[in-house]
Length: 135
Figure 1 (cartoon, rainbow, N blue to C red):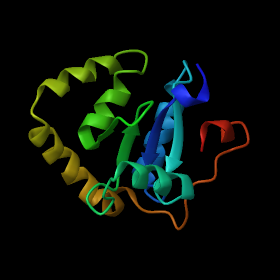
Figure 2: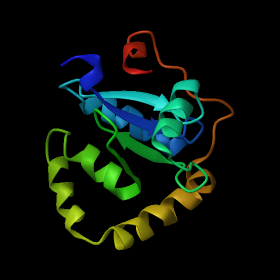
Figure 3: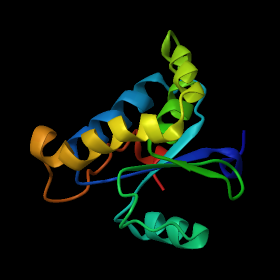
């Protein structure tokens, strides 16, 4: 699979929950399907601008699939989970729920993520062995 075929996960680089989630996906991404970029970084900003995504409305997680398709909030999280090994693909069953209902729960967590999980002063710096996974 070439780099242009990788799925891209954009995340809030200063959010501890988001950084933990990225680490969680990296550990389980045995097929090397994903690349990562912080929303606050140059590449993250470029990718959201190209797609006309308003980051004042969506500032936590965005999944970009090859081409221009992208998913946000619970849709992004569940689509990511479906690609992971083990029981995680079963999370896809929640895609059958109306997005409004799923996003209510997602938004509740997203609104309180800094208060509950904390915030970093700067985006995480990947280790040298993980650097190739970050854009």
